Image 1 (cartoon, rainbow over the protein chains, first blue to last red):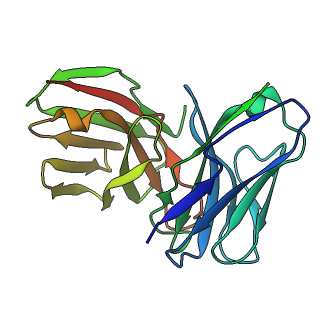
Image 2 (tube, rainbow over the protein chains, first blue to last red):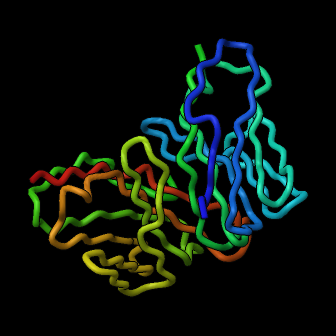
Length: 112
Length: 113
């Protein structure tokens, strides 16, 4: 039981490049989330998926898109990376949207 | 006023000390309260989860919620160097935008041997 896994662990991009961050959970959770964590800003919700087939914007969605591929997988896409998107990205999941969230190990992204 | 306020520290204590970590909040609708621990370069992991006012104990950790004062605390007894981490409080309500887990910014704790 791996919990929440994220790939890649670390990525360097140039401004304007695109990439997709992958997240998968094996806990049969219905809800999944993407956060970014920046120094002094705490954890901020980018997008979430309350259940398979639904996605909604969080606090800081601009510049990102998401896909809930199936119940296990939730990906985050940066279409045209900007230096302001340099951050640590965490995926999380929960049984339902009202339950405790469990986090993955994070992806460190550096945009030059 | 921010919804959740947490003193960022850093907090440095000797091994064996009692540690008190605190958060205040402004939204009286919050009903569920959590503490996460985050080691350096790792994801947050759930430490304690409480509902409504009162205390909850788990080993060396005690979570306390005072809804009348909108104040939550995490106490660590007999602190160990392995407790060195950032501690994040988090909370949400059961109705309305139930996806929204609101986090404090975290307190960095160092326990010195």
